[in-house]
Every structure is written in C-alpha cells, then in structure tokens.
Image (spheres, rainbow, N blue to C red):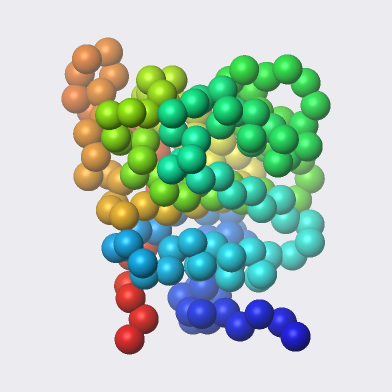
Length: 171
C-alpha cells in the first residue's frame, strides 16, 4: 500500500512548478506544520532518475567538513573533497534531475554554526542551483531573506536568489 500524501495539492504544485522545471525555492513555516513530512511526500513524487538528497542543518551546522562528507557520501561520489563547491560540481554533472534539500536552514544563522558556512557557502549554493536540471529546496522557520548576511564586514543581501513559498498548518 502506498503512503498517503498529507498535502496533495501543495506537494504536487511544488513538484510540477519547481522540481520538474529545475527551479529552486525556500519553503518556510512555523514549527510543527509538517515541513519535514512535506519533503518525504515530495520524494514520493519524483521519478527514479531524480537524485534526491536531504541534509539536516540542525545536525550539521557545527561541522562544515561533516556536511561536505555527508553530501559526498549520499551522492556516492568518490574522491577527497574538502569544500562544498567541489562536491556540488560533481553532483551537477550527474545525469537526470537533481534535488538538494536543506532542512532546518535557520540553524545556519545561530551563533554556534561553523564559520565555514559563510557568504561563500551561500554563493556556492546559488551557483549550484543555477545548473541545469537542479532544484535547491530550503526548509526553514522563516523566509531566509529576512536574515542578515555579511560579506567582508558589510551588511548585504543573500546571494541565493530563489522563490519563497509558505507552508501553513493543516486545518
């Protein structure tokens, strides 16, 4: 028996208008509304040729090298890579559609995150999401564009240029 999708209209809309078209987005909503469940449901809709990778920043925010290793391992990429940029280049070269989901993105803005998750990290994610057949899906409590970004000590806007969709509680 197949698993029932909790929010069929919302999930199918995101799949049709973003994932299938290689577009990226930030899905945000309050704690407990079902963002993590949404990702499980979204994965049910993608075809077998789609590389669907989910990473949890609540767990990985304090160790950039562990983040890179986890991504590399989930992708089955061989080699000794120490930056996300090199792993994402290899990921983008894979055949078919690519979906990278980063859950609990808001943890990157807490004081205990690894300093390697800096402006360059966001810039590398932006470069990756601009690759062909790639969707970057960021899940967070808030629209991440409301966060402050600093580059060389200057306050600036996020280098990530992605759409934003709010996920609301079920009635």
